[in-house]
Image (cartoon, rainbow, N blue to C red; front, side, top):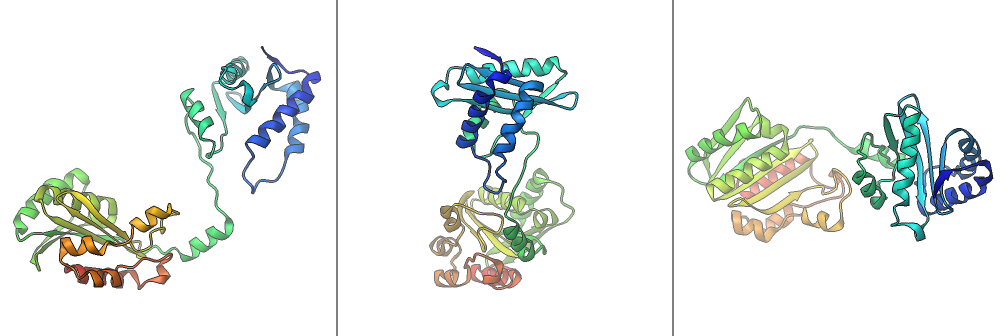
Length: 313
């Protein structure tokens, strides 16, 4: 049975609040404010919406302004879960806040609490604001080390038919976005180079163009470029299939699972088979590092990899 908590219920309300905090603790960098919360509950029972479901469930809700309600806490003891109590507590809290003028109900949930997030999303809650966190020291290191230089790239098509490549590019690029300049080179060492201002600006568009060119031409295509003046990336396709991807600093854009870090290293065997490059040279040149400082400057590394592949830089 769901009912409003009274002053006599304060010990039970505090007990359930403690259980919630123990089961779902706040991030470690938050100050421990449990005692302040427990003191605040005395006023909440008197002035806000505090609901109990027998001795196993608790909902605490309040108004924020004139139209916004907040579900500050929703908790059901483990032995009573799966019975619909959480839904009923929320329904009653929403009804009481609506009577006070609430048009929207919001709540906070930890990103790590996947089960609760799934339940709330099923009830119709949507993300309206995200709180991001980073250790200050890690932020300082990244901001100090993270460059912001030029981004550019070229799609190299393994063919001797530059005209076919140009016709294909003219059809494909408009689907990717507006491009003011397009340059399709002649055949050089068995490759035709394609460059545009659109694919220079957006590496993902370069990758998409290279993949589609590989599919339509039924040939090998390499997308090779520099991103933010700091890292070198290539994507290697064969008849539209992704064959290899390399990023000189695999975790430049953020932490990755170990398997993904390994996957972003060059595969000399695949590169050699599709481009004719010397696998030993691929291994020597297309190295990875934890930071850009562990490698040659990006422009230099880009030119070295282009040379190994036998394409124009």
